[in-house]
Length: 232
Figure 1 (tube, one colour):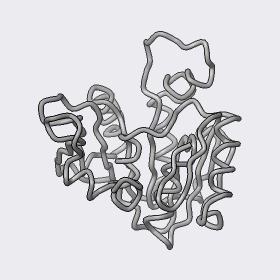
Figure 2 (cartoon, rainbow, N blue to C red):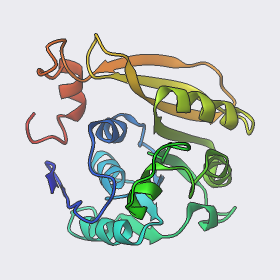
Figure 3 (cartoon, rainbow, N blue to C red):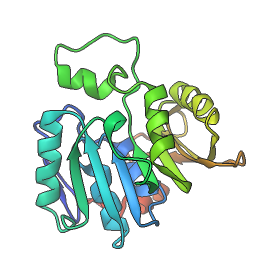
């Protein structure tokens, strides 16, 4: 269980647990618009963070895995935001229609393509791109994102480059990148990218989670996560 200030995440039946980089995505992405889609919601973390940050948002949270869908549904139902979040059991490739488009899309997608497999099928689904290759993810985003909408995605640096190149083929370009490091002496391990149609002007920022001692949270990280973490 992971307890936040305004909701609780139960995660005993989900392959992907609450992690720091996903929390940064939920706290950093622009969720000011009214209709939001969370692709691969897992525990429901990003949907719940978006609902807390934007009291006017209505959120569809789509999840393929049976156990994760059930747990996300329970986490949402137990929260104060249950009237504004719908957890949907579906493959994103088969979800929605041309008539239903979103102002914001949030994604913390699987990214391993050639990596040792786990004996746990749910872990493989959460970590590997077999069920959701980047090409199919981008097709879904192109179908579901409004022309003036934003797509926010969390990936390692190499995979960010691959996805950015593929997204450019349908006219989606980065306008914001947040580079995450454990601390200033470490390399970037994740990038949060905001993409939208028709722009190639990018604002680049870097967020260090810890001071160089590797134990003390930076002021910037504390400020970003203060609305959510009980320790701040």
